[in-house]
Length: 463
Ligand code: FES
Ligand SMILES: [Fe+2]
Image (cartoon, rainbow, N blue to C red):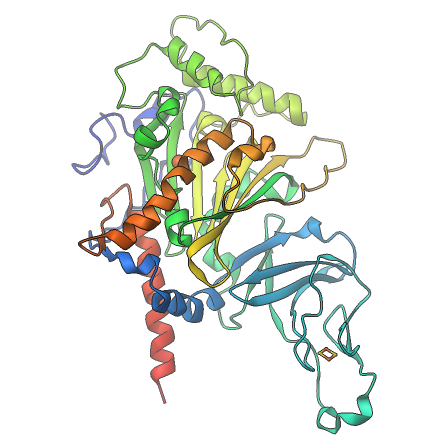
């Protein structure tokens, strides 16, 4: 080990930094940073994952105050196009109200409350199907068929209430809290690192949305560390450095983990470089292309060759050149999370994006979105975004053929989750423990939940 930042509480093998130091290209500074504040080892109560009272505290003090990813800007190509974003009974019409304006209107008629729309679409106005009160796409009031009977509305502004809308990377984010910090302040470190990858130029190649039998946090946390691979995904260890991943807290809201690809897990007996490359390509070759592994020349590494194959594969797809891209940016798992419920993979090839939400008002189940964003081919119109493919509680990921080899990985992750949820109920200690380093991103999630809840309850208690 030669990484100066190595510590006693880390795996004793190569660090992620050690692996970077042997790469074939210069390594950008952001991959070298290791902000790891000490946030302790306190456990959390298992009841946070099922107690309806805790769920209610989250619903009251967290979800209405955070930025949430609602859709893509190009899901709304024309004025009047709208999507519906729903969370914990709130419903927002995310609508392109003008060529350069997107609004998020509360989807509830100001008369007697009927939802104005129940399916996404395109409208020139929102006319309530109950009694016909009508609002324009920008939320301004247009018409009441029995206006004479509403003296209480005379002279009053009857606009539809709005949530905040901000955009980054082609995504539309909404926030119910008018005084929340701006989106770019919250996701600042992520936006900085992702400047290299231009997500606004990507399209949604895959969108699978599955209902899961576990609390939303348990579901999200299954994707916030790599060391479950040795037991949950043993088939990938031959070309994934799992237990020696790097974990960083970039600010209160953004964390990340880096797991080196085309490097074998330290859990395995040392492998020949050729065997590692063959293993990687045998896993489906999502980034490198599949097929027969080329013969490595003396001195070549599996990682260097995998990055070379990945650059060539992506160039064939997009027509762009990736010669300056770091090896890590072509082959590694570089996962960034934004509090409380989103994850974006960095790197040049097609990248994953996750979103987790409660399933209605049920603490015991969640909804997980898996999306893949691919760079658009150069010089061609951007392909259209894939529509959602919904999977129910008992439908396996293997029904989503568009995920390819990834469906096996997700199925393995989901195989744990119902039993995590049951085991949390069954806990004799009532406590959940997190590793000090490798699970600090999960601890950070709980710390920030606690802060939002404490602030919210403090504000309610003030006279
Ligand atoms: S509830 Fe909408 S018009 Fe009456
Ligand atoms: Fe996993």
